[in-house]
Image (cartoon, rainbow, N blue to C red):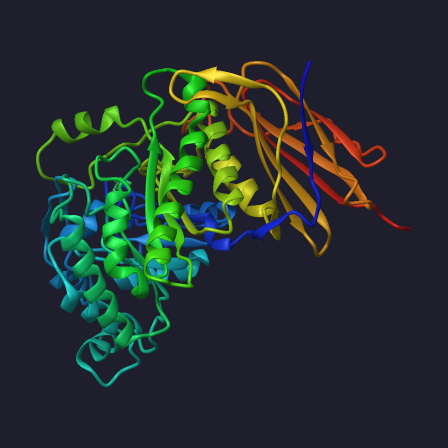
Length: 502
Ligand code: AHR
């Protein structure tokens, strides 16, 4: 059998695995909010309409940060519509998703939900149809203690203490011609810089994310980042990146290798940001906020939009994910972790129903899609220091990315209690042996190996547990070496814990 060899050593330190890498995204899109996290008629809804089954699954997923309220939606959103007495809130056209927005759910409902879910909010401001003033008004409403118009309006709305929201996105995908209020890099860069300066005058503790490209294949990619950063570098903390991988063409070898593209994307954005830093003698290095990423059967979107007129909360891109998609998601998480020194925030898009790990139908319990499982296990066990690894082993060919390494992996060392978690994907078509040299960890013993094999199987409302990770034989450590079988096209979590000294 083919073998991939890797040495893992505690001194090969990349960075701490930031908990913010396990973010998600709630957009006013389709049934993510309405019928998703908020569903007043549902038997599991509390008195505010928040679905408790969805909240339980959100906590189980291990989500740490949630971006809100968009997405393309935010580029036409008036945040004031979503606060104050519900009966007074206007119904509006949402141009991004050709929907009617009732505004029954807004900032204060989201903050109540976020507190119940135990997640940190990441708020986006509208820099599509709006600008500096409205972003400042929103920040004042959210974070200023009182004694001014918008802070007192929040208090009038029943929220006495300021929220202290720390993470803010300066608009969404404004490089995209589909975006309401689409801009050139110079137009956006100027607006983002002025908005950032003003927002930091109101609350200097906030962290700001400037919009990078909507994906790496945009014709303006890299030039967009360079121009935007010329304007905003000193005012922001992150530059965003978005990417979705589409399995629609059925090319399984290529979709399984999607992380190759994400890896190159991160390297390109880092190089571009560092070029601007070098040119302007900035000592501070920017991080990436990878605030939209996932698998997405994108060819279905146009059909969803074409089939209807203006309606409330239509079902949009409710993709049913396969076990193969879950393996891809596991590998994308491996890639994000491996770049923990330069990726500071990451949000899987989206949380519920819309290309999501959690699905709902009206009146019935929520369920976990296949992609739920690698996310939940990675969030649970990728704690501590990410270690550099150089796998040496077989490669195979893919139509989209050429020759790729069959094994992709990352190791995370939790110094207290001294545990080691190895996340590994075999992207190839043959079973492999993974030979780990663990002599740098003399006291480790094998704890567990769980794995998920790629297939066309999916979870559904009637079969919610068809795709779940399976236990494999417990790994053995012998003279500092551990040999593990990685089945063809599989995602794997291999854990080692300290040997008992008694
Ligand atoms: O997540 C779905 C959409 O994808 C978001 O609204 C947009 O930002 C991206 O293009």
